Length: 341
Image 1 (cartoon, rainbow, N blue to C red):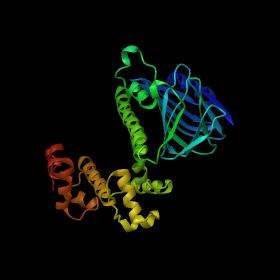
Image 2: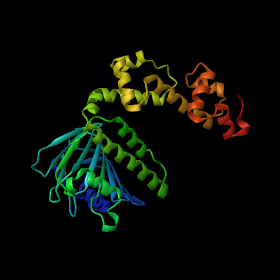
Image 3: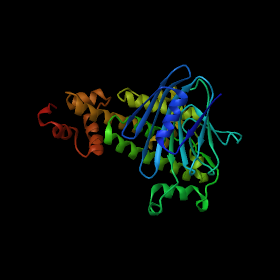
């Protein structure tokens, strides 16, 4: 097992130490660090950045050839760590001899410890592990203490503002996974990239805190009775529909493809997308239609056919509900000369 020690005081320190231990190449752009690694020990990438309110994040997409123990050292304070596992699984302990607890794909873990206590993460060898770690610092200057976000987070998880060992694993949550995919899909550069990522990261943080709140209520746990395999199947179906919404998907065909009952399908889609299966298919078709209106030379009738609808009037009705204008008006507003339907 390889042991790696990380000082979380500054993002720059984290990446210097990761580079020393893993090798690879570090690039830097407007407070965002990227470490690309491809050697006999490890393959993948690690991305991180710091934002306002003493909030930072580090995102791992790594496969190690040996088991790795990562010791996260608290130097001046005890940050609160919000970890979400998008692929694979992780284990955590307070100190090297503490009890080892695991959290799996699609689960959130919230962790904080005494100031003198290290947080230990364990990575399994030969397993592609993707996880996002949001670090909320708990040190504030006196003038910033009243209204800052990290102060509010501190008050939420510290009793009487005294740091104690705290470990929570949430129920499965695919909505956070989708938001993390949105974070990773940001293609802009410079200040625009920084602002977009900060906004999405704050939403992810809010979702993880809400997950903790919901899980404290017994009824919330009862509503999510899907297993990890069922969650993975729902995610794969969602991605298939999103990629090709024009296909003739039905409850029966999706049920046969996934091995899930129609009831489980509906339960999963309502839980993850807050929509029925058919509503989700329709939603994805309308979104694809909007893209085709903007980017293709197809007329409205051709687009209706391309996305799997048979009724132009029905398509116009649901398009107007989504965009507050008819498809023809939408196309006209983009380019008055493009109307051919």
